[in-house]
Length: 494
Image (cartoon, rainbow, N blue to C red):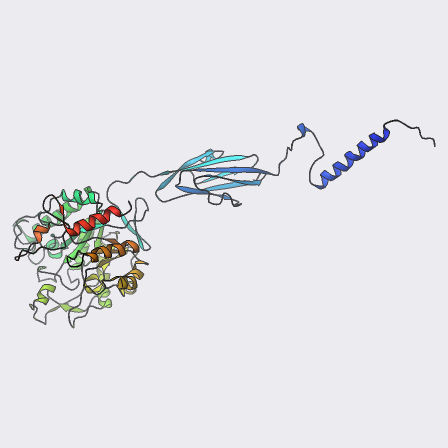
């Protein structure tokens, strides 16, 4: 067969052969030999998703989670997802902030915390968080683990307050002509306290004066009507101070400070533990304040033992033991007959009285040895989800140094909120006051020194005044205790 030679045929065969080989190579790599549509790739394998987080109040996570949009915060994060994949974005909001909504390709999700996008093209979404406006009015405390929170915001709250003495004893004292006496304390002093950064006051109360029992309140400043009528005036006075504190932006701890069993006037000092009238007291107080979320209840000021009459932890909780029917002042002065006793009502019964009245607020329970010992507090605490510790820490008490605070108080504070509801300044050891606050700050424990009253009012018949006073005079001039406390409050974070 004769083959006719054609010029250029070899070059044509080489071009055809090259095209076949290139097509085979592209096919092997998953590509295409087509050059249609301008030579671009019309079917990409993946698309990029960019998320921009505005504000530092939260984060965004993707599902599927490929790593870059894992917890995207206050910046832009990008990941590539398979074409046509469905991706869900979830916004997580920090405490104190609000999620204000999605933008970009996720705008259709509005303010929902999740947004879904289909990756059939490159996508860009934004998530915006804004700080909540400052809250006004007093905190609304709740217990969460070992912390107190403000129920309005969910933020941790460490109380820094003061005690306001007077309502526990003025109603049964010899000078009972001034029902507003707390003592000689003007209500505008609470705005002064608030200006220091004080956010809670503790009001010590008298059981008999509230109940109108055993002749209390004594006639005079509360009128000369029946005991029940005088008790109503006492209750109204307490209410006015609670409201004045709230108006100044402060929460309130109502403290059962002076008590005595039925038939004995609550006067002249403190009994060892609650008695047969204390549950009725707390039922009445809790009924009156159950709808006030800025009130807490300190069920008994300072439980203590006396000589052979030991207040055990079991009796502290369950009651039933016998304690001297006399105040601690009478006991110290030898005025107890050595025989007359009363039966203790335990903390569990007092907690039940509060809850039975429908009150759900925080309850504080003081430990033994004048509220200083907490060694078995956790083991014997009543069963209730809103319990905190009321701890007193004066120099000279059994647990009043850093080593004891670390070994006995810190383990309790690791499980439940602890509040140092009483401590005070010592003229002979100013460092004690500072050390107590420094240690409490490190442990997340709040504190309320004794006391917000005019130092001049504490003068005794020998001209001595108490170091446990934060100011003196109507201009609220700082005492040494007040100077130290106010300086401490200034240093605390807002």
